Length: 429
Image (cartoon, rainbow, N blue to C red; front, side, top):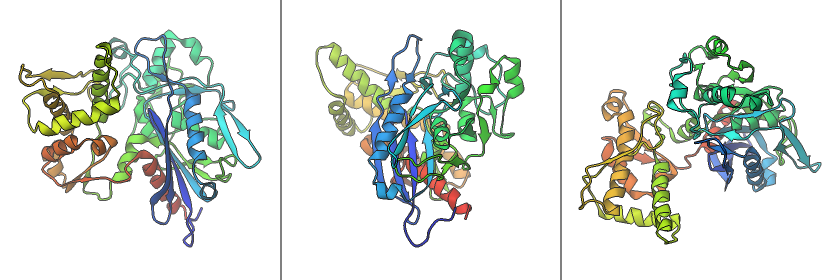
């Protein structure tokens, strides 16, 4: 597939996030996003399993359809490639050849899920430390954690084997979308997403099949690994105006695509933490819940700017916060801590400033400044919606690193995966 050099073609970038779906159209000539649409999925659902985090797959796909429908049809008809990214680690199950149903008019087709399970997300906490310890040791550079696809399958094998018997294909939610677009009989999974499930060796590019078979794991559910950045197939039909036979990239991780969209130089540094803006959101949610228990109704959108204003007035604090309430990739069982408190430093300004500093302290612990300098890093690229909303976090970023800090523009996974797809198409010319 050759990209036209005389008129604009587009790559459709899709990101299926934890709380929202975003789609963009990337102009292949300017490499800029000319159109975008983002909508909340509202897909979370309760369950009977303690600490479970599940989402309704049908709502995610419905949101995807709504987002793509909002894009200009005349530009969708000029789409020459589709890139898909999404929330990593999670897992959804479906039946081969029966995972969706296509519907619509002769000119506008779309699909909706059929014979599919709920999505068990990366935030799922059903696998206790004791349960994880009972599982075989993976041959992987990544430690196994709750919310990882293979750990979830092991849990279902023990506690809900009847659910596994209903399906014969598994993947991430973004792998599912790629499979449906291409009408694939099986599922392909990029090395990025496979590694996020556990029991995958990124050196050999293979699942730990011997280890898994010996443990009685249903290896038939595992998707076929493919190289990240390759194409999984072509659209089986016209889709929202996107022509049939359009190349579709193998689904990629949202973290990697976000980084790809923000890094422009080989000497840039990027690090990712599980405890960033989501920790601030947890803090705001806690305050909102406390106020409600006290009989005061106040929205989170009202609280957030007041916290930032209070922290800006409090330039320093001796309160110390370890913000790892969500664990970390290298220390899944870690928890948050607050220390050095006194009657004189419990104001919102002190605590919010300490929380923002703690988020950066945690990041620096994973990416020490000395290591950056030794590696020849010349600047830090800071990205994420939390930084866009939080001037205090920006202040703490600039204190934390002895290097120039730049703030990325158009930094998101949908843009990043569209860029990866565009680059792949260029290589095929």
